[in-house]
Length: 314
Image 1 (cartoon, rainbow, N blue to C red):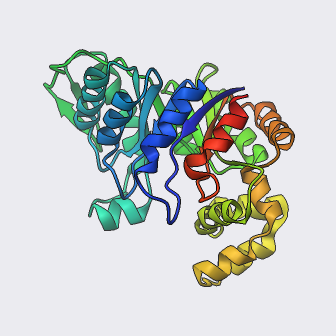
Image 2 (image 1 turned 180 degrees about the vertical axis):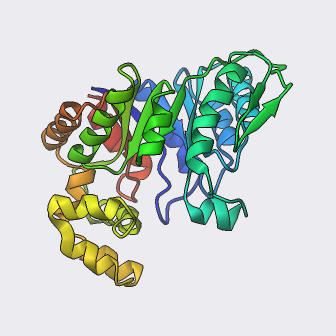
């Protein structure tokens, strides 16, 4: 099982911890760090900062919302980071949420599944240094060629539903987030019906020997998903239908987080001692997952998730 590191954005923790977490991952020998984009740093800017502050770790930027960033922007960003840091740079694509796309950016998510397919097709030649010449129903890029050296980036697609899985079959890698091993296995099966070579990664929150603050961080991260389409059904199937029903009554975030049992967290996160976590990693491997991207929990007792990353690196 290959382990990489994905930078989390944990409630009440300083945004600047992202760079230090990446440095720790680099020092521990993890091969790759995933640099996502939420409400703090621009992802390409953060990736550049990490590249200049680390020794050799590979950078993957994203997932980037394909109805917000167009193929030329993504290709230019990846080439910029690669040229400025001298590192291999991958890109990850996704559809993001209505909150981010429609409210923050004022864009439409209509046709986002089609846009995800088209983004993979449009980006491949651009990232290889070819002139753009793609026209789709949602995305288009004509006549641009990178002025910087081509990064020849690997493309990863964040997938959950059927349209995203079919887009991932066109990419180098599919990544899934916050899934039980059983749910991950179903998506892997769907992917393998389309493509035998696309690798599969899973983002999984991790805390070795967690204290109550670490458990609380994971609870707060899981809570928004409990009533979300698809996720709600997954949690109900895993034996937590009562928690899903409660989440659908729209309780306060604090009340909902308090209602989440440890067993639910353990179904989608790596929590416990090193032996328990290794057993959990085995479950993902048996589901067909090739790689787990650890999202280390950061707390006052374990800032930047350093203890967790060092324990799992061993």
